[in-house]
Every structure is written in C-alpha cells, then in structure tokens.
Image (tube, rainbow, N blue to C red):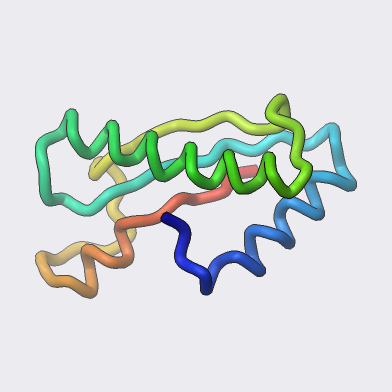
Length: 95
C-alpha cells in the first residue's frame, strides 16, 4: 500500500521518466528491523513492486525500472521505536 502523501512525488518521478526514456531507476525496497531476514527481504520486494506497478500505471516503461530489496539491511534511522521503524519502511527511487 502506498501512502497517499507520496503520490504527488511519485507522479513527478513518473513524469520525469516519461520525458526521459533513456533514464533508468532502481526501486529499492526497505523494511524495519522486525521480522526474520527472509520475511523482510520479501517485504522489501513487495514494496518496490508496488511502486513499480504505480509507475507503470503512470506510463513509465517497465524497461526503465529495476527492483531490489535490502530488507532491514540499510536502515534510514537507528533505534527501536515506532518513529524509527516508520522511517525504515520505504522505497527509494535511485537514479
């Protein structure tokens, strides 16, 4: 599920990619530290794939996107609180 607060940002990226068909991105899925390594890698894949589906629906060519899951391996925030976990549940659009 994509947070509605990020739809405008994702549409901006989709528009840029639509105008620059030679550009490629990697959609990096991340999770918080809870859960097993295998579970978090699978969840990171699901997050990245949700963004890929959205971008495809917005007109981005699937050939311009790759997905990758880091699971819990590259946290954006350290700590064991809901605030830290929230920051770590994300997809990074890497050009």
